[in-house]
Amino acid sequence: RGRTKFYGIDALLMIIGALLQAFISTPIELAIARFILGIGIGADYVLSPLLMAEYSNRRDRGKLLGISGGFMWMFGALLSTLATLLIINILPSSLVWRVVLASGAIPSIFVLYERTKMPETPHYLAFVKGDARTLKEKYGLTVKTIPKGYKRLTARMVLYLIIAAACWYLYDVIGYSQGFFGPNVIANYLGVNGIIFNLIVISAFSLPFNFIGAFLSDGILGRRVLQSIGFLGMGLPLFIFAYVGSKNVMVDLLMFGLSNAFNSLGPGNIIGYWGVELFPANVRGFTQGITVIGGRLGVITTTLLFPILLNSLGILPVMIILGILGILGSGLTLILEEPRGKSLVEREISVVDGISK
Image (cartoon, rainbow, N blue to C red; front, side):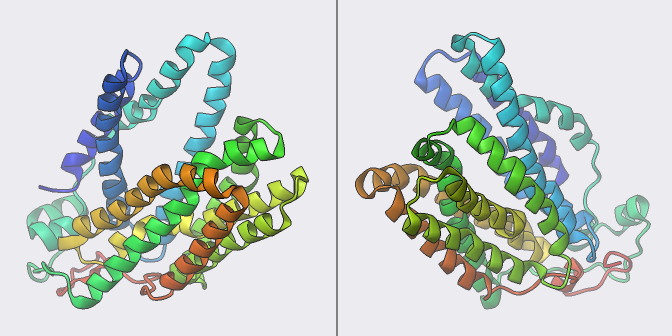
């Protein structure tokens, strides 16, 4: 039914789910509110990269995806951390968690109206809907013939889809292990405040390298090499952290910070976009959805297993496991096709004048 039709709906779900959290009184009510919020967020993981990719040109698609995705995600994390620190200091403790959770509705409220006015993407109009008239009216593009895009996944596409989903799975196991538990577990290990620790890591390592990585993805390295290097860079500092086992705050903060820097430089900017860049328009929503599921399974794995492993093995062996997963992700990434500089039209059977320009 179109990309943009649901782009406002997912924002509305995020608003409803976030605001409901301010008024819950039981764990079941919280679970329901979080479920509604999760549906909206999950849909946005599919739709935002899909729309950005289909609106972008071949030369700048990587940086536009990186800035709108990885960079803004981390910028939001920074603002969230700062807002939490502010709220903790001005509100009574009984209200803090309600206000913090409900504040997630604010960004969605600002973008909801604009999303409802967005035109359908040229790729959807041309290759899925076959609407030459609207394509001409909205974008001034003339179609030679009404194209018929791929409606099935080839064997190569299936391979890429499995690898892309597996990479996102591995990335989220590593990334969320650090994100969910790192600021508290490692900060406690180092004897510093968890929120302040997270703020330092985001400001000094994550955000700057997210921005740099967004521009490098359209450069000579491309997405594949950059993500592979990023995976290695996420894993190797964790090995060092594990083997050094130091309680020197600066050394350990540097190792954890380097891991986050390479995270942002590579996978953090790229991992969520293979599902839209390697597949044709007719199946692009489906393939992006599958890769998103791969990532969400990684989050579930982390949530369920990380505390168990941490309690049974200790922090240093867990860091070694995460380092090994980083090396595995690096190797799998190199199997994927490089999408840098390639028009999304190349994924289709027919060619539409102007879209690839």
